[in-house]
Length: 109
Image 1: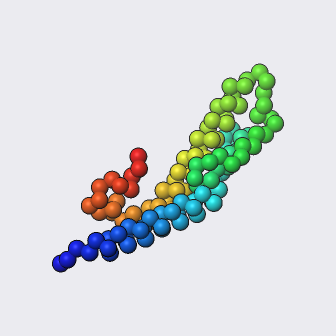
Image 2: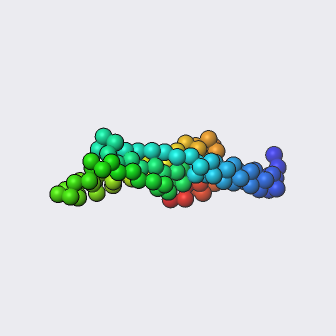
Image 3: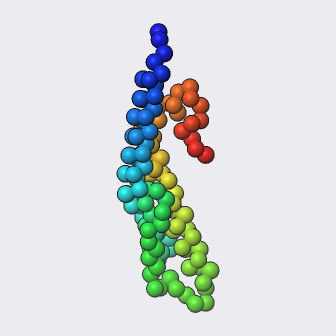
């Protein structure tokens, strides 16, 4: 059994191209999350960028600004969790067995 370095490099380049394509596709998809029964809605893309925050005027209580802050924070965090989950699902099938014997190269964390 011979080791073909060129074949391994071609395979790595192919995987890198597939990962880049999956990242681009995820970045073009939008997830949405809300808090307070829909009083605050946040849209984010698969790249983890917040695209919009919509606040129902009924959520704006001058006597309780902390509540609005909490609702925005909850909705943003949920949208970012959904975006991360979207990206992970796009990547899941592209890294078989965590790249085998190559260690943690795919983890980035």
